[in-house]
Amino acid sequence: MFRKLFFYSLVAVLLAVSFGCNNYKKTLKTGTNEMKYETGMDLYEKGDFNKALQFFDILRAVYRGTEKGEMLTYYSANCYFQLRDYNIASYYYKQYTQMYPRGEKAEDAAFLAAYCNYMQSPKYSLDQSTTYIALKELQMFIDLYPRSVKKDEAMRLMDNLRAKLETKSYNIAKLYYKTEDYQAAITSFESLLDDYPDTDYKEEILYNITVAYFTYAEKSIYSKKMERYEKTVEAYNNLMYFYPESKYLKEAQEINKKARAHLKK
Image: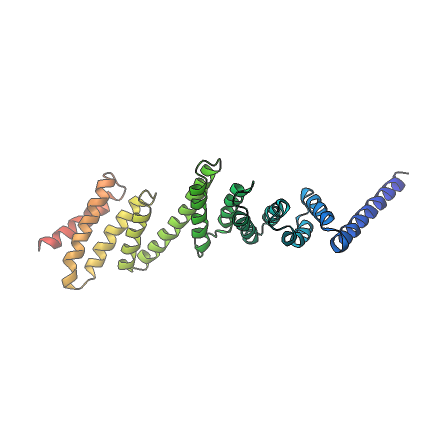
């Protein structure tokens, strides 16, 4: 008896699904725009974003500039967002803000457009073009909506992106340092300090600059040596100013002593 009930229930479900599928296809092909709109919205509410998009793609141009067109653009973006296609989602969120700048969802769309680029930002070792775009758009959102409840979240996301760029810059400078390209290492380390003066790598960077200047001076032609020994002493003084009890104190003092000895000759 139980098996029969299970079988009949399964058949009923399959028939309902088949009917629903056929009805959905029929509406997509021959239904009125109003029917398509209602069906698309129903599919969206049920979380069937791929099918909903088939209706939304047809209707956006039909209802362009109207209240329905506004919602179709926003919901299209949401569908792509839910499907994790952040590139297209960002496109439609931006389109919404451009077409409906005073729309009900304008603030949300502006934030989510930037957030989509945040989600596409790759790990620090890869090209960071998307990271810079995300930073720019998050800043634009803050400037446009300074009182938004999402402002703190936008700032947190920006901090995460800057940390990624900082790590990338640090690793590039460190690579120059390890391969003994001291001129490039010094330039990279100093640029990193200019861009991120409060970096957690600061103590190590100041020490590395001291070592790099001294080693660079040692390998330089005679006419360049004195200038680079002076830079070594200057770098050491910067390290001691910020970190008088630096963990690199012993090594740094020895380098400073040698550089000063050369300057006295």
